Image (cartoon, rainbow, N blue to C red; front, side):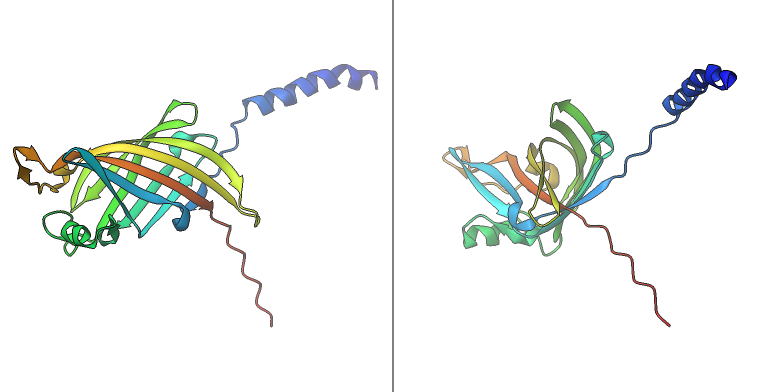
Length: 211
């Protein structure tokens, strides 16, 4: 009995050492899908001396989120280019034409993230491949994480504010008009995006077949 008591502390320390040296369990990524009624993909472009805004109303997006290591998180987005809405049907028709998005030939706008880097607390630089009008370019977006919340039905939500700028000419969207020596439209486009996403619920295992 005396011997066991004498060696017990050493055994305990050995166990603690093994636990400390063991690799940490790998965190599982959580899948969140965009909550469409509470998500907006907006943009603004300078028109002469002010800015005119618009948005896309049809889209799908998925976030693979790693809370423990956000740098490994990814986001995929697909937008129906023809769903552009600026509040002016005549202008929207022009934007759908070959002068701009040419949605008959290029119906989708896509974004696939390639890198996530922490910028400050809850703020990240997200780099990815943006494809518009069949042209893919690397773009950088500033993403602010707004935390998590229950949805009142047993589910969970997360949200983000996203900002960035792109040059539309990089994607072949180059139409413009000159009036009195002034360009009607700027080449630079401001991206103003708000995302609310719902955590995907685990699939319920199928019940065993009965004989």
